[in-house]
Length: 392
Image 1 (cartoon, rainbow, N blue to C red):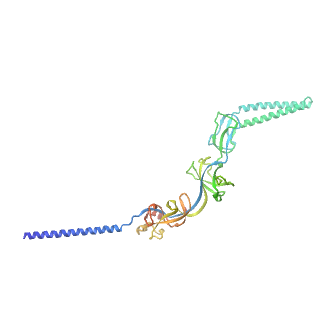
Image 2: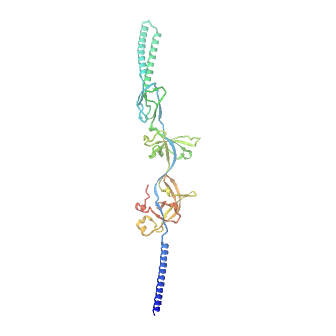
Image 3: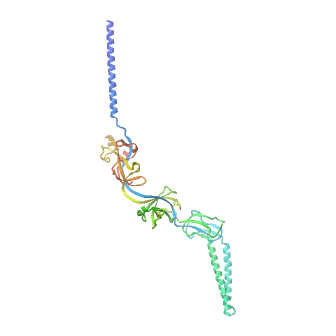
């Protein structure tokens, strides 16, 4: 009897264990099915990108070249006198006016000569007076009177020369301008013909450039140019064309064209012979549709961009960010060939391919393929600022 009960208990345990095992296997299958379901329903990975709408702005075509600032009025002041420099009244960098005294040379020797000549003139006047009286009284000759007159004229001419020499002992500025070089100092001997100062008139600064013959038909008097001088690279200056040579240089096939600064030519950054970079405006397209250059890719000589689009959003301007997130709207990248017109340092003009309502990818497009799922990280900024095609 006891053996029978023991066998029944053992059978029951076996049945219970088999039920438990079967239940566990079912749970594993369910879990596996759940995992498979989760994997199948996971969204594809979206590539993060930034995008913007095209804008409208004036865009220009430039002729770019380099030159050096040149002063049309600059002189080397040459000493006309001779003597020791007693006074030095200006230094390099000083602005002077025409006629201003720059330096004074020793005048003692010339002044002494002038005193002697004045005494000689008085003697000649007395001799002439005596000769004329003698001629009137009949005791003198006409030749004696004429010789006395010639002697007086010579003495007076000598006085004028000496007075001019005295004037030349003072060195003056022949033009308005800036002292760019001083070649003398106090106490040195200055000789006639010695260059003592250099003066440059900043009002006469010009920018000579050479325009290729094929471009000269687009150049005219008053045409504007942007100028950057290397000595002050953070500033930009405005210049315009004021002289065009009537001849072509046969050696280079170019025409000399001269520009002058519209303003700021007295800016201390602008110096004679300073290196300058010129951007002459050759053509302007007002209110052109433009996109950043960073967005454009080139392949086989053609230009392409990637745009962000969604079949669920016919017009992104009618949605806000919350609606897009709530509806789980998905963006894809599409590759578009474009035709460009003028370009500047940061933008291309768009002639064909897109319009100002196209969302252009500007960052992250290098990793994309047509149809790639993307996440527009700049979408919030775009929607908050509002889509505008006004000037940038």
